[in-house]
Image (cartoon, rainbow over all chains, first blue to last red; front, top):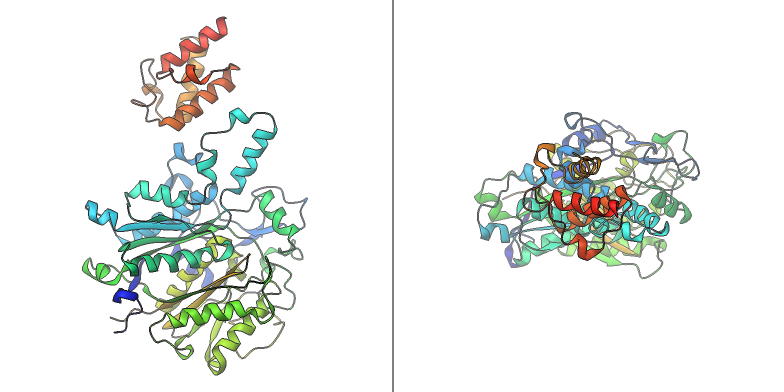
Length: 428
Length: 79
């Protein structure tokens, strides 16, 4: 059996949806990514001039057909004010993924076998900020009845289930910057375990607001050196990197049990090939020397892969946030791959879109599927002078044509939470 | 129509995203205009804000139609 699942149930991806600083739309985002475009610019959501970090990856407004965000194409106008922006972005990606998959439950059994697990790292921060202003100005009784459901992280899953009638497991992951990978991995396991046949899974984030940027600035996590040259700000592994660039957006996939997907003739992007998790037990924001947590997460993903080895993995989409921790991940990847590191390609797509926090892992898993499909590795922009050398090809500046059958994506979050997921070409 | 009635109508159109022609005096917020219980809470808050009146919860519960809202606010303003 080539399957990876418990109970022999294999999980494939049959739909994808992306909202990113490059575009609204999975394919347009991918096209711009492999062309080497950057979605990073000066912050316009609010006036950032009082803060040391003034650039971010913001989702562009504009007509849907051109890859811009026209919210009314995704969320009815009267419902928009009942949801924070992270829910707007999450729904836009989720609707894309569901429509792309072509899955429409036709009876109650189908509806009950379809679940949702879309999380967020932070949730409705702008909503919480606005609500606290209302309360602190003595108008507590004027706080909107939609304040709580607008801010709650699991409300993307809630809204999506109401929209489509998905009555299966309804869940949401909250593990900071590892949210997206955890959501896809955990949702796959729900399918393997038989709790659902179809799961819509991923992450969304919209924390580019004064409170969010100020908070990460205070934690000394954001880049402050490239305010005048935004597209150069995110530079994973480069010696001049000085912090991450906040991005916003969402990534959502439709996961489906293989036989279910085959019965309805669904298009298959790839298979979930393995999934592993670990904890650092070290520090709230910094990984330990050598990043043993990353090593253990990758090792766990391989253990669950049904027999893959490091020699089978062609591409790693790194966590690579453009901070000092990049080299710790590099240490862990080199140690994990050993001699196989020499033939590995590894890039950080955060160089083009910034760090989408709770959405990052889901968007990056989708990039892995597109890389497998098209035989193209997306580039690491701005890697002009690597802080340290490595035998691993980090795909500086321009995309590369390469045959990729198996890809691994890493995500690590504050609190010392790590997740790795393996995506592989589907072979019956 | 009174100024109050006009203003109530405008608030309802804005908050519930419904066509103005549907906002007749007898229209029920929940049965005719697609509101749910949270929408009606928000609507009452919007009336309070717009007309500088206090609408206690027991009174708010009795405001089911556009006319109920107009009557209540007119009475408060006249008092």
